[in-house]
Image 1 (cartoon, rainbow, N blue to C red):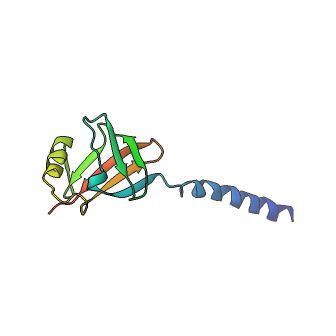
Image 2: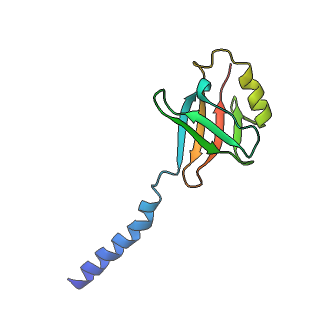
Image 3: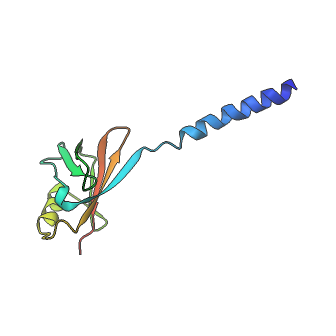
Length: 113
C-alpha cells in the first residue's frame, strides 16, 4: 500500500511544473485605429481602448517593441507615417500585444491595403 501512495504522490509532484506552463503571459487586443494613441518616442506610452465601452488603457513601449506594417517590421516613425494616411480610422483595426509579466507592449501590428 505504501509504494502505491509514494508513486502516486511522485506522479502528482511531477505534474505540477507542467501546469505552471499553462499560464497566460501575452494578451492581444484588436483595437480601432481611432482609439489608438501612439507614443512620441520608443520609450513612451501607448494608449488604446480595447472595446467601445472599455476605458482607455495606457501601457509602456520600449526599444524592443516591434512595429509591424503589412507583416514586416518597421520603425515607429514609418509606422506612424503609414497610419497618418488612413482616412476611415473607425473601420481599421490594429493588433496590440501586451506582455502581462512585464506589463509592456511587445508588438503593434496593422495590415493596410
